[in-house]
Length: 180
Image (cartoon, rainbow, N blue to C red):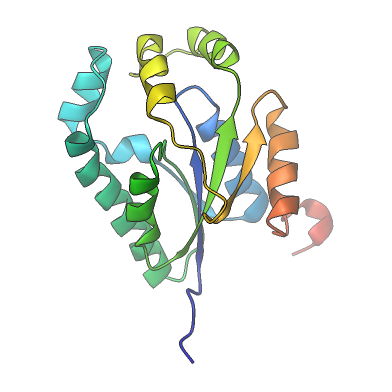
């Protein structure tokens, strides 16, 4: 009988401004897993395009998604579980990530566009302008019932989101009470 993947990759997904980085960092911290930011895998031309308020095309995204997939496979080869942020707005994008040799589980961050737009107004140092948020919502294909993952409402506090995700995925958190 074929053995399944030995490692897990949690992909925290959703439109820009949903709190992917915050949730991913908390998950990584609580689980003791490496955390990666998908924005670091973008080609400079993609970042330039988004900075200028131009939405990415599928052709722009394929190499980016493939590099994230390959990184997740590298982590799996090293027997390292990981958490990565990635908008993963379309099922086809998620299909590329699922090609990783790790078991890929998606955490879809959801919420009303007005709340997310308000949050984007308050952040600094990010290349994604608020003007592209609607295009991300227009592109978003929510997780289908046959896709492995959970949804979490960003109206909740990050700690609450992480607690819900860990419980739903039956993943043990590494807290001081857990011991060495």
